[in-house]
Image (tube, rainbow, N blue to C red; front, top):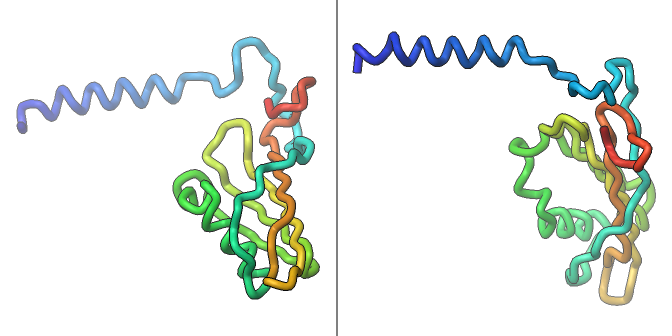
Length: 140
C-alpha cells in the first residue's frame, strides 16, 4: 500500500487543483454576482392525515416528524427554527440548505382547534433563493 501513496496523492492534488480553477458562475452569464436573496411565492402543500394533538405545538411537531424534512436535519440543511405567533399559525424555517440555488425553505402551517384536539388544516411552502429569482419565478 505504501508504494501507492504517491499515485493517490498525485490524483488527489490534481482533483483539488481542478476544483480551485473552476468558475462558480455559469458560463451563460445569467447569474450576476451582486444578486440579492429573494423568496419565491408561497405554494400550497399536501396536508398529511394526522390525528388531533393535545396542543398546537404538538400538532406542529407531529407534522414535522411525518414530513420528509425531519430526516434531513444536519444532512440537507443545518438549522430549524419554529415560531408560533398565535395558536392557529406556525412558521418553520429550514436554514443552511446544501443547495447552490436555495438557501432556506419557509413553511406556514394553519391549525384549527377541534373538539378532538389541534389539527393542521393548511401547509404552504416557499423557497428563499440564494441568488435571486428568475423570470419564471424559480430560483436562479
